[in-house]
Image (spheres, rainbow, N blue to C red):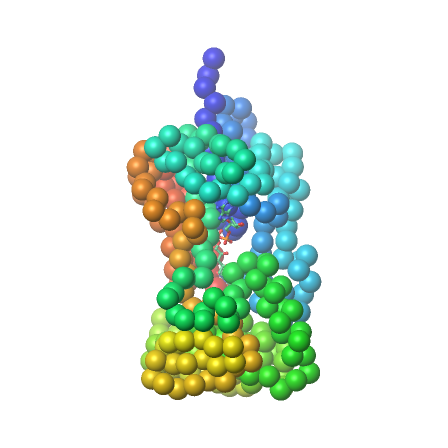
Length: 286
Ligand SMILES: Cc1cc2nc3c(=O)[nH]c(=O)nc-3n(C[C@H](O)[C@H](O)[C@H](O)COP(=O)(O)OP(=O)(O)OC[C@H]3O[C@@H](n4cnc5c(N)ncnc54)[C@H](O)[C@@H]3O)c2cc1C
């Protein structure tokens, strides 16, 4: 009797779903391979359009894709569960209610806003990393509908630029500031592209503040390291990402040879390599 090989995929974001689809095609006719796709939510979240959900341009349902529907009639078993621990040594994923053994593990748990020790960041700013955050930001924005409002987006990476642009397009009467900690805006790009992006933000009325690092967040103000104070009725924090909590303190050994889950916007790749599985998903900003 042959032994079943269990492949667990943690996270059904872009990376996890693509991994499940690829593996499912590869092993479709092989009943000895079992694929589990585990996510805390019953749907895939289209994170790349969350700024549109927050701005009220599209409905929240448009950002959700039912996972059972996607994988019906395939060999992929979809499990809705929140994994609290990865026991690498014993090759098991643990949730509060269950445990999932695996032979190979692919981690596609994405990232979170970086936990920085900036006073007031948690209580007084909004995030946009998941659907719940986007909707909460949307509700906060609705309160200012029609008013002259000061909105500050912290972080001039691609997400921050997208958020600032979307909000400026939607709230013409809003005064939107975009905080860039670097001295140059979008340094990864050519001067021509940077100028084009800066011009576009200008047309939308977004004020770009370069070389500005936030030292404290207050209810209606942002305080910069150089002492400047920026009045903000609403603050959206997009600066910095880090791995999800489930990966905290994880020591990788056993079937892992190499592990990389960091986001690199220019070459955004989520790469997990196990002894027999090598998976890369490319998701590039347009
Ligand atoms: C507003 C916004 C706009 C963006 N626009 C673009 C863009 O235009 N182009 C681009 O390339 N990128 C864009 N990005 C970045 C892009 O969304 C991320 O790079 C991408 O989502 C990462 O994919 P992922 O599969 O690694 O993780 P995610 O998409 O974050 O998926 C991770 C999944 O893991 C699940 N999960 C996490 N922890 C656990 C756990 N412990 N137990 C169970 N499940 C868990 C989560 O529920 C989630 O479904 C944008 C991001 C934002 C926020």
